[in-house]
Length: 207
Image (tube, rainbow, N blue to C red; front, side):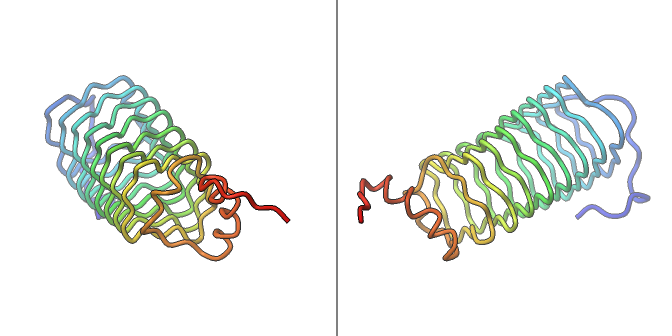
């Protein structure tokens, strides 16, 4: 992961497409409405940064840390994320379809109406996060976990789950129960999900 703050070069000015940003510190700034697609952020640090209506499609984030950073109505489709940590960040109305995330950790983050459709999430952790109206439809989830997180109206339709660990999470799933094959849940979650699973399978429970 990215190193100490003193190791970074403070960035000044805006962001531009097709650029390589290596070892920069982005702090206390706004990149709202920026067009910075197909960039590569390598070994960077973001702190208290705003990306509102930003266009970052096909950009890559490698060995990068983000803290208290906000993505609102931004285009992160087809982006690549490798060895990235996001702490206390907020993502709302974000298009991240077909994104590839590998060794990424979300900690104490809020994700609202984020679209991960057809993405590939490998070794990704959502720790103590709130995920509301998040779409994973058609995504491939490999070794993904949600410890201490709450999922509300999550869409898992046509998801491929391999070694997905849902234990310790509050599960509010609206679609894709059949796609949970390959996921691990705890006994309490099973009890909570049982009526929904029965309804999905067309089973009538009557005493």
